[in-house]
Image (cartoon, rainbow, N blue to C red; front, side, top):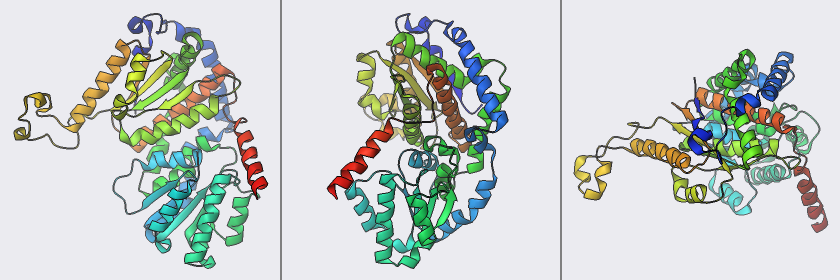
Length: 429
C-alpha cells in the first residue's frame, strides 16, 4: 500500500459525542457511497471519463519525449505560464525532483513586479516558455504569454519564437491557439474533457515534472492502482476515498465542521495541499454547500495556526499527512555540541527525529482537544505514492460531490468575475 488511511481520531470513542462521529456513520452512508461507486465503475468501463483513463496511458508520454529532451538540452531555465490547475499540478510533481540542471519558474500570478524581475534575470537565449491554458482564453495566462512574446521578439527575433515557445491548450479556435498557429509554436493538445484541476495526471502536470526528471510512468502507476482498487472494490467501507468523503460529509452535515484543514509534515507535499485546496473548493463549493479547504504545513504552522486550531472555533476537520522521518537524512549532532542542560532532549537526535516527534505530538494534541483528525501516512514520498495520493483525493472529491448532490466538473460562479474584469479593461481602454 502506498499510504495508510488512519481514521480512529474521527470517532466519539476518542473525541466524545459532541465532536466525534458515531461508529455506525459509515454504515448509514453506505447506500449513497455504493451508488457512487457503481456509477464510477460504469464510467470507467465506458471509458467516458478521462480522469480514470489517463493513468493507464503511455502514448502521450512517448510522443512528448522529443520536446522534453529539447527543452532539457537547450534551455537552462523554463518559464511556465498558467494559473490554478494549469500550474498547481506541475508545481506539486516537480517538488519530487532532486538536483536538476533545468530551473523551473512557475508564473501563476500577474504581479508586474514579479514578472519584470524574472525577465530581467533570465537569458532569453537559454530560456524556454510553456503557456498552459485549457480554454486558451484565460486572461491572466494570455497577458503573461504576450508579455513573453514581446520580450523574446525584442531581445532575440520573431523567428526565435517557434524554437523557444510551447503551448498546451485545446485544439480549437482560441486566442492562444491562434497565436500558436501564427508563430508556428510547438503544441501539446489539452484534453477538452479534462478540467484543469483534474489535469495533474496529464501532460499539463507531467511535462514540467519530466523536465526535472520525475518518473511520470511511476506516478501514473500509483494513480492507476487506486482506479484498480475502485473497479475491484468488494467492500465500500474499506475503500479509503469513499471513507474519507463519508467522514467529511458527516462532519459537515451533523457536526458543522465547515473547514477542511490539510497539514502535511513534508515540505515536498506543500504544493500538494495547495493543489488539493483548489480541487476541493472549485469542485464542491456550489449551491450553498461544501467545506472550505485550508492548507497548512507542519511544523511551520504549529507556530502560526495551531493555536487557533486548538483553542478557536470547533469548525474544522483535520487531515494530517505524515511520512517516516526518524533517523533519516542528516546525521546526528556530535555530543560536544549538546553541552547545555536545556538541550539534552536533542542529544543523539537529528532533524528527522524532531520532525517525527512533532508529527506525533500534533496528532495526539489535536485528538486530545477533541479536534476530528485523520492521518494519512505515506512511508516514502515517491512518484508512485504521490500518484496514489493524488488519485485518492480526486476520488474522495467525486464521492463527496455525490453526497452533496453537486456537479464536481463545473465552476459557474467563477465566470462572473472573469466577465467583469474584461468589462473594466474595455471601459478603461
